[in-house]
Amino acid sequence: MKDKKTIAFVGLGSMGLPMAENLIRAGHTVRGFDVRAAATETLAAAGGIRSANPAEACRGADVLVLMVVNAEQAHSVLLVSGALSSLPQGAHICLMATCPPDEVKRLADEVEASGRVLVDCPVSGGVVGAKAGTLTIMVGAPEEAYHAVVPVLRAMGDKVFHCGPEQGQGAVVKAINQLLCGVHLATAAEALALGEKAGVDAATLLEIVSNSAASSWMLKDRG
Image (cartoon, rainbow, N blue to C red; front, side, top):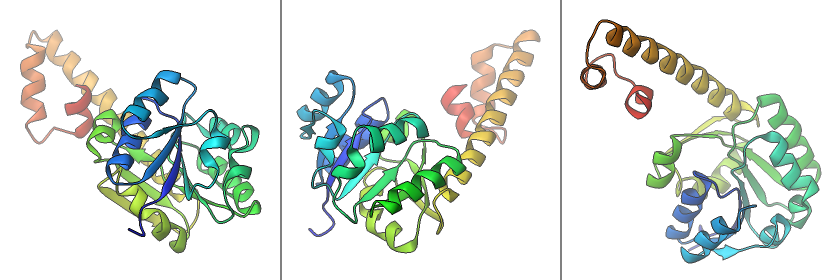
């Protein structure tokens, strides 16, 4: 059972909560914190441990998972709320939020200076993927750090990729992914609008293109 970890999880939103629940199902001990008390209560009902604040969640934890909104929130949790100083030396911090690569690098430097390790690992797959444990996870981190957190990441996603040895490289891949998502969404909207203007039933058109060569994940999920 050496791969079972004590995990602090901060950010129990629409994706974070099911991700934390999947960690519990995988046998990890999960201490959760969110600004919404209802989220921590739901986690506790699933077998997790409620924490009063991020620092409390991090005491003695092997890994901290940050599923917050952005780099600013990650910085606040780590350095303002005291999470970073509460983690043991050598602990790993999995930054799973979508953040600009340069901000990830700056945060990684601050974490490294404290004696801990930041693992840049944003996700793709939305709420559906978070609930099913089928997220795509893009990791930028040194080889040793990557292998240290893989058992944790695989409990949340079935497609885990090591994108490079530097923090920020995972964020670069996520940015590319988001750019393509935007293109697919905009193009799908224009295509469906064109059909409607021609008097074609929108639901029929969506079913046709969703099951043809024109299909994409974004079209099926958001069409």
